Image (cartoon, rainbow, N blue to C red; front, side):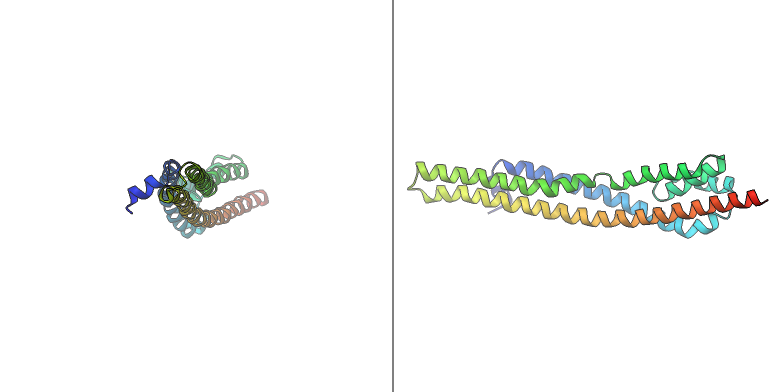
Length: 206
């Protein structure tokens, strides 16, 4: 049985499962590229952070300009706020919330596909069994027609489970990447906040 025959025998629910699998693949590619860029920026920032925080705020803010990826975005928001004499703590909190929302973006769709795909497979199972029993009542002497409906049910179930497993693997992998970046953001925010408070204490002491 080739793939087109498999798809046809799975019944109408296979179209919905195809959409789910394509959506999971597109989200997976987009999130992979997003997290890879963010992770590269994170490593570079963590290497440069000690020296960056030793510079005057104006100079540090100039070096930060243009960084829009977490966690560099969080650090730069705090540094630029300190340079402008604004509330650095508020700027850090706002930037953290924005960056965290971007990191979590679209993962909820993968979670939905993990739940939805088996339900669609179950719907195909029920539909196929209904067809099978209807044929059994009307054409009891045609076992091949009966098993065709059962085959549709099993194909839909198997496909739904495969799509769900695929989406679950993606969701788990990207959730771990997100947690790693959130940890880096926490460290970055703490480092900038410590520098801001230290310099504020030094200015008061002077």
